[in-house]
Amino acid sequence: MKVTQDLLADVAEVLLTEEQIAGKVAELGQRISADYAGRELTLVSVLKGSLPFMADLMRRISLPLRIDLMEVSSYGGTGTESSGLVRILKDLSAPIEGRDVLLVEDIIDTGLTLNYLIRYLKGKNPRSIKVCSLLDKPARRLVEIPIDYVGFEIPDAFVVGYGLDFGEVYRNLRFVGVLRPEAYES
Image 1 (cartoon, helix red, strand yellow):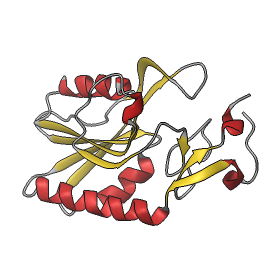
Image 2: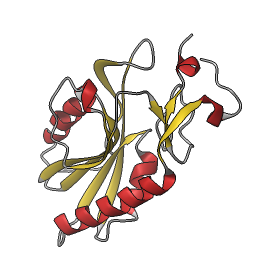
Image 3: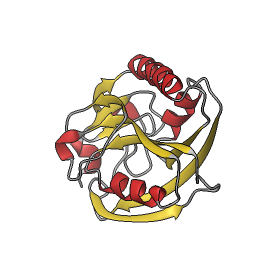
Image 4: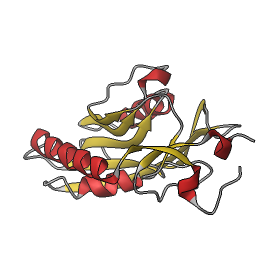
């Protein structure tokens, strides 16, 4: 991997602007607030990519909520393709039994990781579990996943920014952009 000092030079095109993302996060926050009115919600962020999304989303939800963090690994050899094997690197720090849980994801592509996580979390007996993802990439779906709240459907391209990375770089971009192939092909 060769990353230039100018992160913007590695981006072929801006797919979603900072303003588009902010507008969609506000809309999702309103919908979630209405859907869970009168209840307390637990947001579970899947580290590291969904952290910026969850931080912005939780500030747009107008009801009592708790947050928790999980870290999983499903990427193998190339770093651009999911291996399908999921390892939990950091589990929840509090029980979710009897709680309404909203699993917050940055992107859903194959669905393999999310399918595993939903089954795993259901084993902890939450009252309900739903999924909110900023990005949905259905062209790569291998497992059908119920996505209750979707920000944007995107084409089959390798994207970075707003938490999404390649080799732990580009997460700090304020937009979602398509990474130039030269940045990830050796």
